[in-house]
Every structure is written in C-alpha cells, then in structure tokens.
Image (cartoon, rainbow, N blue to C red; front, side, top):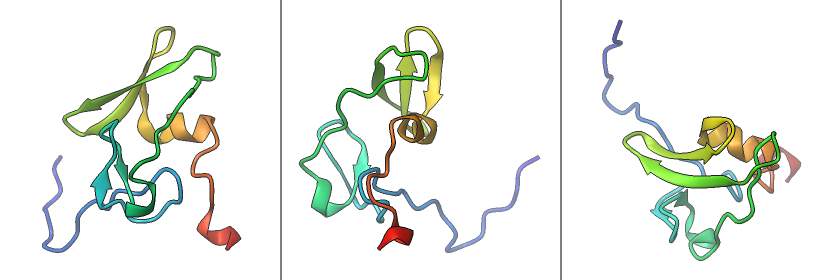
Length: 90
C-alpha cells in the first residue's frame, strides 16, 4: 500500500559525523554537511568483525559485508559509533 506524497514533506539526509543536515557529498558519495566535506568514513567493521564496503544504490548509500551481506547505512554507522557528536550532548 502506497501513501500519498504531501508537498513539502521529504527525506532530510543527516551527516554521519555531526548529525546535521547533509547538503553535499564527499569523495565516497556519502551525504555530509559542508564542515565534513573532506572527511571520509574509514575502517568500518560489521558486528561479525569483517570490514564494510560502502556502496551507492538507488535509494542512497549502504554497506556490504562479505559474511552478513547487505547492511543498512544507518545500522552500519550505529555499529561503529557514528554520529560522533550528538545534538543532545551540546
């Protein structure tokens, strides 16, 4: 069942480094804010201990683990402790 699209309601991408609004992309094609445009996500590991590869798909970025297969972008960041700064902590 599809829901009706409402004007003005759209998905807002969040920066994985600071949880701010993502307005551009870095070299890895990940949506980030302007402050973190030159930063990269490096050495991300899955819960099984294997490294995660970043891929870009039709619906945005996602991770691939050789053991676990496809992992959502948000879940992969959560496993590795991103975002680094919470807005609630400020």
